[in-house]
Length: 123
Image 1 (cartoon, rainbow, N blue to C red):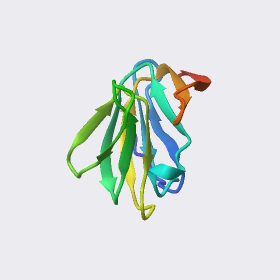
Image 2: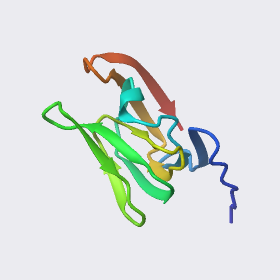
Image 3: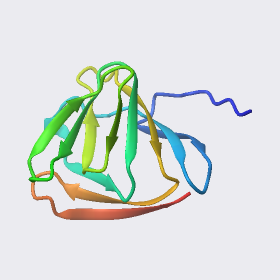
């Protein structure tokens, strides 16, 4: 058995990493509104979010290029394959996140959609 204390004071904290197939993290957005978000991120794998507490809204780019918002609800698992980021109007939002352990993240400018950087995660 492994027991891990959750510190929801950082924007992102991996709390368990199996190393080959999946990992779990805690996400707490640093933004209060969609207007503050400059970049969206998109992984080469699905990323699942489960609201633990507070108010948390995900901003994402739809297939037609338009931006949309999804407010996370308790007991609702929301999985993104689209470019996305999050915000919490009162900074209370905290989500449990599951993703694969090996992937690449592409960051794009929210206005132009141009790639700003790529980051590889190797477990």
